[in-house]
Figure 1 (cartoon, helix red, strand yellow):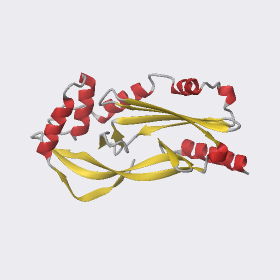
Figure 2 (cartoon, helix red, strand yellow):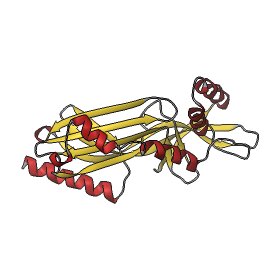
Figure 3 (cartoon, one colour):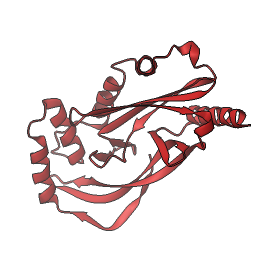
Figure 4 (spheres, helix red, strand yellow):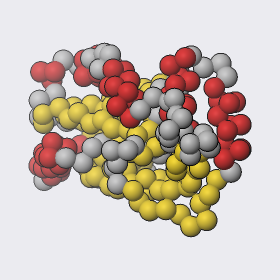
Length: 225
């Protein structure tokens, strides 16, 4: 993820953020507390929060904790042999457009969020089936969504880039004081458009997603032709 750019006059009251963090730690599990502290603290010589690699490992462990492809098929009551018009599409990435989600730019330059989203898209001869699972590591919340669309109703498949404003830790001094700033995160999304609505999915911009989107766009053109 790239940095969209700092917003002018973006200093955030550090004392208020410290109080806010203390409130959000209440009632959370030890693991959730580690996650919350990770997003409130930038890291410094006195920092005891988990690092970027440890947080990434936590996310990946959760993302691989179940077979989401099979879960998606089961939710739709499908067998994979029924949805072979296009190779099943698998999208996943951190999600930043959830207002409740925290965000932080790691020392490696990668933006991470407390919300992570996994999406599977299947295509039959007449319909497109989507399944989406979104989870948060700072709380017990999760969200599942299943949708079915007829090709004739779909306007377009595309990818888009959006700038999302977030409050993030800037730096932490050796006294333990963290400076907070407002900034924008450049996030990539897949979108399926139907009249009056859009289905959005967090995605990584790479060769796989580019080819997958091109394949399903070609199938849509074929079905509408």
